[in-house]
Figure (cartoon, rainbow, N blue to C red):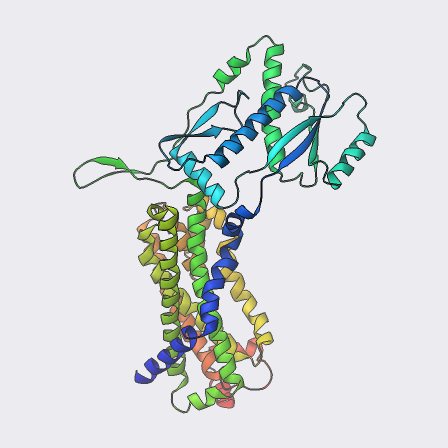
Length: 492
């Protein structure tokens, strides 16, 4: 036992007492989560600008009201930028909504959830900041020549986009119930360099369709106010399940906003993935270095292969717990600083540690076995590919799991030992009620799978650590796995 602890201490120091560890700790969150947070951090570098949009109004009726809506939106952006609200109340006035149904620019009161959602979108750089300046373009003889001229202006940055509104879009047409096409209006053409995902395209879609609907109602003798009255709707506020406290009072659990509910579980799953990756990869490099430089032969003179592997795994687990403490502590500080401390699911913490320890043992042992079987890092890449694919499997379907944490797919994958740690952590972080029997069964299956994996890989490690020459074939690895006495005798 003393030898195992000595090896574990040495592996722990080799893992955490290096500059590479410090740099990796700092860089890994940026590499894994930078796509979410970096746009928000760089938001201040992007300045708002007036984006000129040419409107080719074939109807002759939509440009003026559309310009009024654009001007109201611009005023709202200026107001929120110059005089942003400092506190959030249950109904905070933040300015006119760009989708204001009346098109009058009247201020809209946002609920607490809507305001938190706006703040989250702003933090992640998803808030719109550019103003739209509309210019009318003659629609009398608008053809491909004019389309090309406006496209050239877009290429030369003289224009941001142009919108072509068909002349017959307001004309009433008979509707045939047997023909779905008769329910559709003529298409509005939006032309820009970023036409696929542009915010201006979404704004024009919403605003123009509201104006077209109001105009058609007026033509039919119906006041647009009727449309506004019909479109009044009650907001649906998300709430947690109702519980009874110690005093007998019944209260509802508070739920985070939609963006937090979506990205918080993903962030927790990514945290576990980072810890496992930062723990398993050094094992691959350490074992490969010891084998290449014949250090392992010296170590085996003082301890057997089982003691050497056990000590390495224990030191690796201790290193992973250090990474967890650093990341979890940093995440807690940042969450409190940003005002999201109440959204941290502390109930996941005990399960997270259990799944993390088992995941580190399982994947570290696999990486060690692969390193012991090869002599160069490039030879390990082909053997590592299946392992990486299994590790990344939960990341391919995380969005579906967050939406339906108790679906059949999520349940089955959470009971599949190689994907259990990430999948169960993701499901638990959603806040959904996961049956206790599934949690217990997943831990039992993961313990059995980890024990089997460690025992199997220890056999490969025991023989492969002294293996020299060509890379063993799959059949030879299977021979080591079943501990073929003849193979063991030839390779010892």
